Length: 391
Ligand SMILES: C[S@@+](CC[C@H](N)C(=O)[O-])C[C@H]1O[C@@H](n2cnc3c(N)ncnc32)[C@H](O)[C@@H]1O
Ligand code: SF4
Image 1 (cartoon, protein in one colour):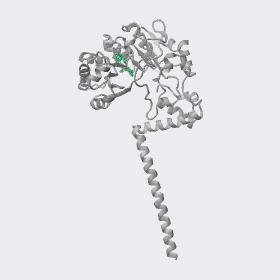
Image 2 (cartoon, helix red, strand yellow):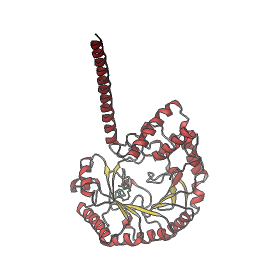
Image 3 (cartoon, rainbow, N blue to C red):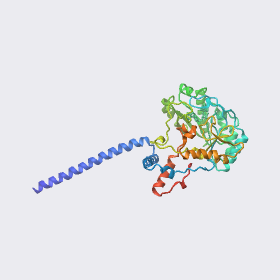
Image 4 (cartoon, helix red, strand yellow):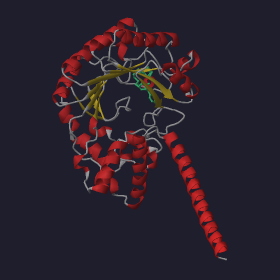
């Protein structure tokens, strides 16, 4: 009898343990699959952490709609722009199908050195970190480009950058780029086949851009140069979708950076097939309520004639807040007009500025800053005072 009871008892324990083990394995299996699936979307642990915190943040926002106003670092006044984006030339040799350049009606030409150098002097003195020397046009058409970059470097701008279509970037121009001290360059190379490239980059020649790109990469390597950092970029759109993989395979061992850039519609001003922004991994910015556009707080746009626009999507300069010919950037940056624009964004009154109203590619605050702000809020109750927009 005792023996039978013991047997029963042992059997019960065995079944219980087996059951617990089975359930644990099943849970581990499901969790493992879920994590693996999630990790497929999230390339590394840091992104995983940021995305998870942002997910919680999103849930919290539903409970407290005033959360963002409490914790994010926006005021009507802004410090001198850390990123200054002067349009050194607004003439182009192409008519790309996704670019508003072909529709531009404003006067075309070069930005004079006197005006640009004044801007560089002021920006260097006020701690600007980056200067982007291009906008709507092809920078390689500007014969004074090398000198302009050199000047910015001599004045101590830490990062100089430009984007080019690469069509004119022959060996001589490559040498000019190396001599200038340029820090970063993007070659916009939309396609891996002649057919696709020339359909997108109208007026340009596939073989020429290919040869120029290979020459730039080869010369930089041969000379053992660290700079400029070379990014090869393809815009992700209907015409190029099929070639993204081939693009990555072709260039991954040669370029410093590969940029698969999501096409956007320049605040509703060009026709494209999709305008969904790609913001943080696993979380689209359009899932969250729209915030003030971070660019208004740190990025200054100066068009070829000196007009200061509020946004780099404003290809025809429709919303202008001043001109650097007669006013300093410092004054324009906190002028009544600029502050009024920021005020509208702070009130989420985007509809009062038609350009902003139609925008889907606005510069959302960096996910890292949101995460930091949220963690500060949760853990120490610290608010926006120790956060900078452009860390
Ligand atoms: C207007 S272009 C001027 C510089 C130069 N001409 C070039 O093509 O690189 C500046 C950048 O905008 C990109 N671009 C043009 N149209 C775009 C669109 N619809 N969506 C996203 N980027 C676009 C270009 O590829 C380039 O990197
Ligand atoms: S994307 Fe660049 S190359 Fe093409 S039309 Fe616009 S400015 Fe010119």
